[in-house]
Image 1: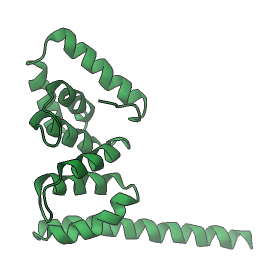
Image 2 (image 1 turned 30 degrees about the horizontal axis):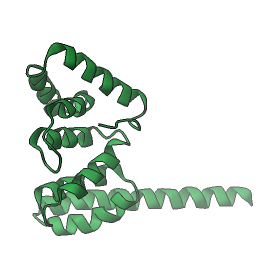
Image 3 (image 1 turned 45 degrees about the horizontal axis):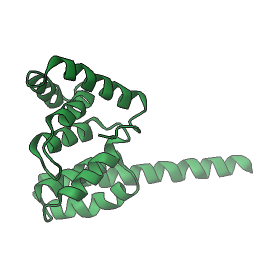
Image 4 (image 1 turned 60 degrees about the vertical axis):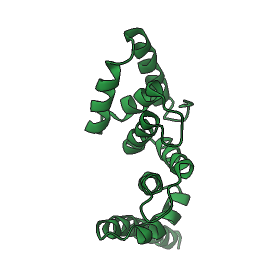
Length: 161
């Protein structure tokens, strides 16, 4: 009888995982069809449940005002939630936010930290990190690299910048 429970739980997990993946993918499909409002409807429950891809994707829609009013504060909340889970594109989004002053004070040093965190997985982050390193004194760059490494070492939980 116990094995029935395990099979039932496994099937329930697989069905739930498939439904989440379907909603995430359908959101991207709706976005490609120029229906961002429908992507928001699909991604919001996923983001609230902690899906890092949905959080970052929804954050971009709030940041750019696609399908919604521009809301930099909500975008930053979503990017930070996603970044705490180690999602590289959330790092890039936070780097862009600090670089451009989108909802935060423009801060190239903080932008560099976020771009460094995303650089391994996102060529845009790598490019921006390289560009910013030429603008910031070398001694400061080394300190900022140490902050990025400490953030990474903490599994992205101690990234208070």
